[in-house]
View 1 (cartoon, rainbow, N blue to C red):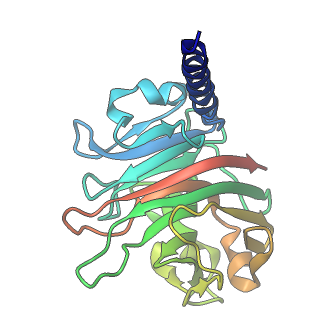
View 2: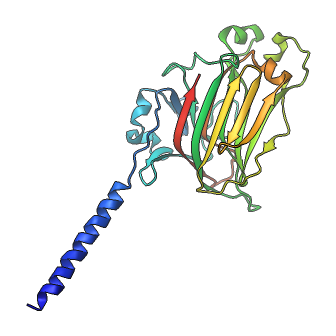
View 3: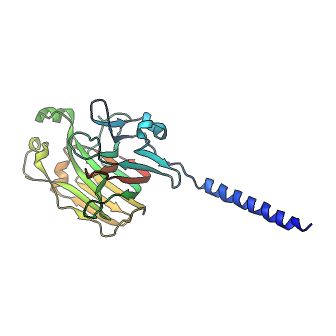
Length: 284
């Protein structure tokens, strides 16, 4: 009879362990991000040597795509998608590698994009999961979001350019614990439209740092809102940076698309970064 309390205690511990296991299992979350209007570029070379891309509908099955398993994968512990990048294959016009999503207004196609007059809004909840340091002990930079310009086929032909690439009007960086924003400025605000289609017509502004630091592993929200002649960036719902005036007005000549993820800004050997995305919304 004296053994019953011991047996009862043992059964209770087993039940408690089972409950704990169930609670742990229930905490696993699948990322809930709609990839219908996104393709991804990763630092893996294609047969032609350029960086590999995966577009809809293939990207919908990204956890099972072998080529993506080291670069874009779900983390069931917190319901995020991890974007991992390190120096490797690059896209045209850059020396840096990326695991980055590119907006596609028409799923699977790059040809349909938007202008500032048409407007756009992107909201993303994300975190900097890991990032290496350089030889001076400073963290490597990551571009975590962009608005990239694009030439129409007619514009490309008119200036004799081989591709549709135009400058990015917006780059948002993770830079040593701060969120940093950079935009483009027109070198000659009186230049005719035909001249400002050329990348050389645009320079970089001095940049802007949001005051509140962002720690690794800390979730934060970025919202980018674009309308005719105006661009607004909002960090965590209350810190704001607004761009308006002649440079934004003249930018209206270009088409645009959003980008978000991990555009890793170094070629240092052994360097890498991991960015997590929890929520992603775009509207026009």
